[in-house]
Amino acid sequence: MTWSEVWPLLWPATKETLTMTAVATAFTAVLGTLIGVLLVLTERGGLLPIPPLNKVLGFVVNVGRSLPFLILMVAIIPFTKLITGTSLGNTAAIVPLTVGAIPFYARLVEIALREVDPGVVHAAHAMGATRREIVGKVLLREARPGLVSGLTVTVIAVIGYTAMAGTVGGGGLGYLAISYGYERFETKVMIATVVLLVAIVLLIQAAGDLAARRLNRK
Image (cartoon, rainbow, N blue to C red; front, side):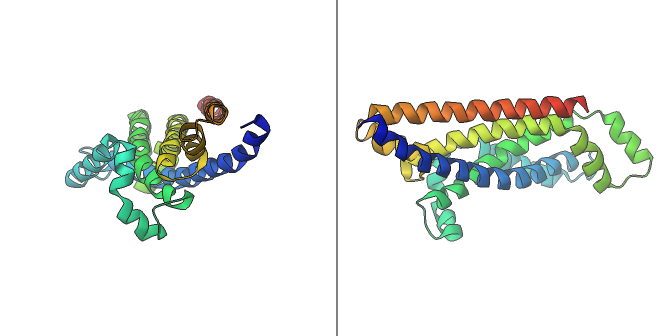
């Protein structure tokens, strides 16, 4: 296969990878933030202390983070079929991508929120701020640099997950690398997909670092 034959294959696969990453990241950002906030609020001494709920959430997050993505993807095939009607393709891959990334990001959100100065929280509470105001205007606002850095790490992890999803027909650059680079011994395709994945990761990391630095100055 010549390079002129390789290039037409790359754009559709790249678009599939970016689409899967973007959709999974959107769901992860919302649900992961919610779980991370609940982990902080429901702990002993938190704004809404519910230790049993905190332990359950912590257990779920720990289990989700400990499962290798390939095993997770196979284990939740029935759930994926229930949501999407199939276990193959880009749409189906979004389900395990999201399920795998949520506990990962939730723990990073928890860490970022714990780094907020407790004095700021106590001051807001003393001024009569409600729990919702403390969460939205104090905790999440003060933790923005950490949240952005955590989301950057999560996006990069999701990109790695998409590559693994390609081994079971998930689509994207991972599927292209497996179906052409590995099974058909097309070295040029393998090299091109690796270079593209590295370039995408570097761009996302640079953008995330820049955003976090700017938020940290405010």
